[in-house]
Image (cartoon, rainbow, N blue to C red):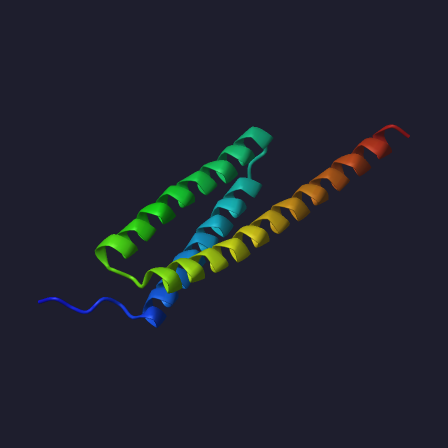
Length: 114
């Protein structure tokens, strides 16, 4: 029983869904990383999460295109657009958190040196 390949809208929605799951996993990893005391552990969690999500996304894209026969352009365009939005948000959030930590560290050191 052969079914027809997914149409363009379905392919685009799958691209958006994959990116949404990717962003959710990034948020979970970020919350776990924030609980860490050491910077090295924090960075390992953040970068490990990024690498793992990239490999997983690549495998899912391959499966969607080669096995499920998603419409290539809508699927990839939506996936890329949503992925870039998520990546931008992730970078912005990490940067803001780093600034917050730096300010606290700076204020603590200024008060100690008075």
